[in-house]
Amino acid sequence: MAQGHSASDESQGPLDEVPEEGLRKVRRWCVIIAVGGFLFGFDTGVISGALLFIKTDFSLSPFEQGSVVSILLLGALAGALGVGRISEPLGRRKALGLQGVVFLVGTAIAVFATGYWMLVIARFILGLAVGAASATVPVYLSEVAPTAIRGRMLTLNQLLITVGILVAYFTNLAFSAIEGWREMIGVGAIPAFVLLAGALWFLPESPEWQLTHGREDEARKFFASISDEETADRVIAERRHGAQGEQDSSSAQASSSGQDSSSGDEGPDWRVLLAARVRPALIVGLTLAAIQQFGGINTIIYYAPSIIQSTGLSASNAIFYSIAIGVINLVMTIVANRLIDRSGRRKLLIVSLSGMTVMLALLGLSFVVGWSPVISLVFMVIYIAAFAVGLGPIFWTLVGEIFPSDARSYGSGVSTAVNWGSNFFVSLVFLSIANAIGQGQTFWIFAVVCAFGLWFIGRYVPETKDRDFEEVDAALLKRFHRDPETGEKAKSGQR
Ligand code: BGC
Image 1 (cartoon, helix red, strand yellow):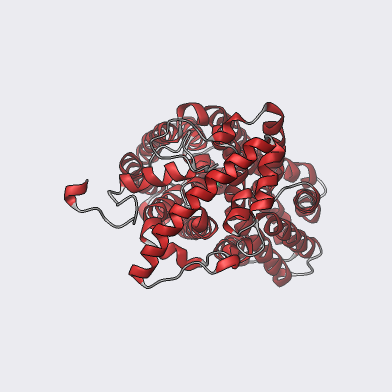
Image 2: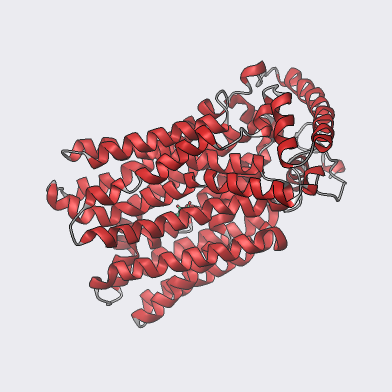
């Protein structure tokens, strides 16, 4: 949490003295917030099994089947883009509650769908909720978690995404005997209700949101509830001091650029993203969002069974392989969750992308040369493990960490939207490209993307571990050789 410490200060901010009891509270809140991640995983995972029965019930053509799957990605793109408009004026808590309602509505329409179009509409509505939640959850988590456990709390999001995917596979397994696609989708109502109930009765509003909306008293109450009155007073005083400095420099900037991105108590609007000092965070957020998808992860997650089948293994074991991949994904995400606040984000990212690059190169080779299917499978599993220990969770972690407070919900929204847009694009063209140039060659393209990602991280992504938001901001500006006050490009003499 940003507590107004100077960038040179090695300490982690006053709220790192939060007593164990306070931390326990924070952890409980974070698990509820991350149920938004669970729904992300569940709703993207459940359709593969449900579709097997929907397509016969509604006699869907291949195009119709594809659209039922991918319309969710388009909905998610729209949901992520629109989220700032909800989560800025309403606050994170109400925004999340509202998303719970949208999840419930989308699920109900899907469960009672009487035909193709109703299902498409339901999946689009679910997509809106998935997209909005995937942009809200990292922001909310990062704003309630004290610095020392922030990485861990943020990786809870990815942890619950992977749990959601896995639970979806098991749900599919459980209801496939009765061909119960409505039941499969209907299970999603339970976590949606938990999200709504959590927002209504259990979660506190984010103190960062309170502060950027002039509600100092409420923010103070939050800090006091996890530490004590004295610490809360100190934090607020330090924040007031920090905010004053920030205001001075941003009003100087706004008057020099003729912009006004803040609109009083309503909070900032999307134009805050145009400010020079937000640009490095935006470049990092958008680039990592694209790399996470163009590195090919969902071709393996969504198409693993058919890829495996094309290596010569039988298709009857498709669900078994999906579950195996889901388990590896989950286990390695737990490893990342344990490591992230100790070894830091950069180290894990570098290990992750190196592993992904090498595995993709080998996977491509195994297809081109025609090695045994078991070898391809091994490369695939190690590739998933490499993703899960770094790029998977840490992209979502950084989305919550890199943006300055006033740009956080909009910055997270556009990064998340680029992630969903890239996901949609890759899913759409993967099979055609693989048919045109060969599956092995397609994996080599993904390998090149991951190699580029490695270079990009090495050069532009700062370590955020143990840093409060202001320190993260300073580190980002430094990596981009920008002036710490204005965010403008520093003259070469200043570097
Ligand atoms: C990605 C999803 C992917 C999932 C797999 C997430 O971080 O954003 O696109 O399906 O990881 O675990």
